[in-house]
Amino acid sequence: MKVNISSENGTAIAMLSGEIDHHSARSLRTEIDKFVITMQPEKLAMDFTGITFMDSSGIGLIIGRYKLLKECGGQLEIRGPQPYIRRVLKLSGIERIVKIV
Amino acid sequence: MEIINEMKILLPSHSVNEGAARAAVSSFVIQADPTVEELSDIRTAVSEAVTNAIVHGYRGTMGNIELTVRLLAEREIYIRIKDKGCGIANVEQAMEPLFTTAPEEERSGLGFSVMESFMDKLRVSSKVGKGTTVTMRKRLVKNGD
Image (cartoon, rainbow over all chains, first blue to last red; front, side, top):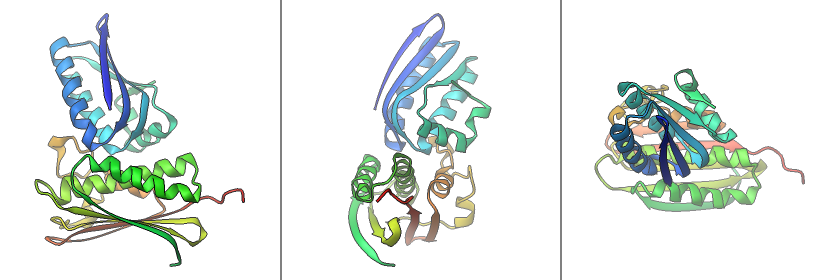
């Protein structure tokens, strides 16, 4: 599990790769939150293109970041989930609060 | 229940073993030639059940998780995940979507919903102080031969 975060014009992009489960979500959470709290981006895009597996721990990860961004006055966006990841996202109903592109 | 093949493994409740459990189940199920979607469904359901055992069953302690996978007649996959952890006082409530006892750890409360949606059958039996057993079944679509 890896995350590379870059920022441009107030938008931070977190490029995720590998598998998201309860085990890997912890370190992702720490890295992303450190960046968001320090940089206060207007928008955080979590890019799921490189994610090969995700269970409901990924939903917890997204909801947690959504709350953090909201507290900081920013927005969260999910980018590029594979069809299979979309099924997990759909089951959670998260698209009602987070934009998925 | 005609058992064509069976695998049993015992995993300590280290969270890194969530991935190990998925990998082991995938390796076994692949012999039945599942579709990519079916394999994803099974991997996800196993991940949820094993995570529940680690996060809730053995919360703050260590114990073993017994994982049994069977290939049954007519391409049915049977999976049993058993822990000897704290057990669930109210199984019905635990299975409600979004119910969680660990919101501070960002648990979404969707584990059982995922298992129910991605598998054909789900059964949960639990006894407080004794542990929890999750049994799931999924029939694979007919292959071409």
